[in-house]
Amino acid sequence: MPSFEQDLKPLFREKDRREMTFVFDLWSYEDVKTHAQNILHRIEDGTMPCDAPWSGEQVQVLRDWIAGGFEP
Image (tube, rainbow, N blue to C red; front, side, top):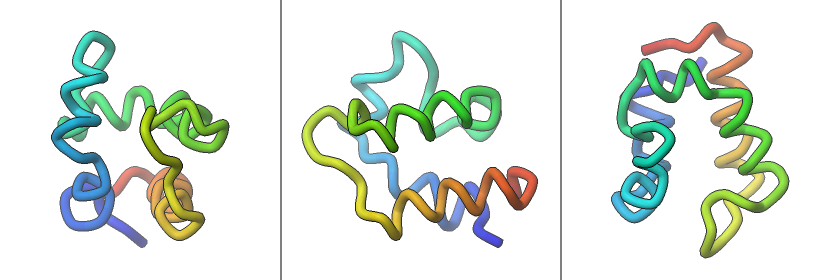
């Protein structure tokens, strides 16, 4: 199962983090865990990140992290 620190956090770029700070911090385990379903929905519908969609592999990392119980 993927972990936040090693697998998921690196997928969020500095630019992504800056653009979302008004809602949550994408580099914060607790913030991403709290908003995981909303983040997944936005990534799946292409509204996040705003400049380019994630690859299927990247989206699957987030899905697996959620399904695996939010490994830190």
